Length: 492
Ligand code: ADP
Image (cartoon, rainbow, N blue to C red; front, side):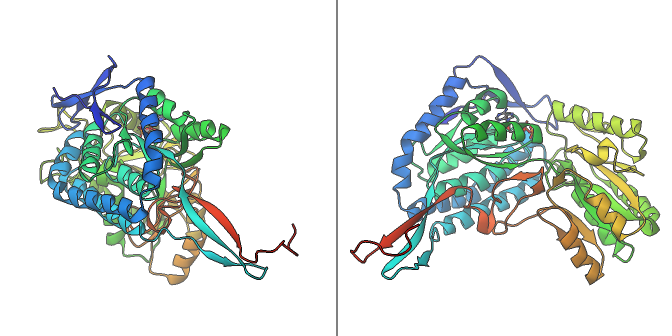
């Protein structure tokens, strides 16, 4: 049996812990892929210490040299794409096409960050005084903790680790318990790319144990986290007490607004894609469709027909459109929310339970589920479900659509379907989300474009794109006086 090992100070070490968990293929729970050892707090401290000891050497390595290693990692990732896609599909469940997409995104992000290593520029600033000027330098923090979820187990670690390294930080990386194999492979490829020992350290284990340990370690100066709101806010509070920097990407309840003049078939296909793609297990998934009354009946009947045609199955079957839920805990959670929707009085139109049929018996498959006549106060309209469940909220006009769309504690992404330019720009101005899409699904993003949300979704600098390095650097301001004389004026 494959036992996943930690990667600490350039060595692959099996944890001494006797606490283990199986890594299970969610499409077939009889397929045990390996065993994850839930590392000890002491081992987590060793990982942070290795990163701490490696920091000086790494920060003194010229940024373009650091970038070259990340560029080599991007090439290795490309060479390994087919293999890693198989690993990803087997342990997370998404379709091979979705895994391929995730890997392409990861390669693009690594390439982009490698390029940024030649652009780690500050600015020069004119002074009020003669023969004086100031300039800024971007410096790394030191040890950065990177804590990631299971839903994009390659892309999210890469979009955090690559900019952290390019900026000159060293890393303690704690991936989700459910996806150790992809995390191990990422670190193997960084090792092969020539990363010096201690610069990137992998610690496998439970969030409440090793995650908690690294979050509270005094040597960790910054923490980048993606995951649940509860864990993110807790970590934010803990880090605040000692002034550590925090970047959190948490929940979402992303709305699509469908207006009467839109291309309805496009809106339906895009909403289905956004709601059921990646089995609804992405932070940018469409979970609320806010539809104008006039077109609601047609929208509803067509999207129900689309959901019922969805081909459910194992991700490695080329025929499959929607894979399983990642694990038993999430599976039960999604089914629980479907029950809550029923109890709260929403009208269940399709789905509503475990998906059954040929080859589905041994996996965590859930039917694509649509509730109609959902009201904003219902829990399924407010809480993140993280599964293939779409709530339809009917509204009378654009103004009510905006009120309903913004009636959420979250603000990651959104979209609108209309061809009215005035309403498009009003929507862009009024919608309370960090990203928004016009006539396309709520999902998707590109390596060179910033990513992140507002309200309870996001804390700290945006990830990726032109802002990718913001979180991973501190600004130092330098004043230069080349008069050689005592300063006169500007005495404050
Ligand atoms: P989900 O599993 O729903 O994506 P979680 O927030 O539970 O969301 O997990 C995201 C990541 O955060 C995982 O790597 C998990 O182990 C970690 N984590 C969970 N709780 C804590 C905590 N208290 N401190 C640090 N990390 C945590």
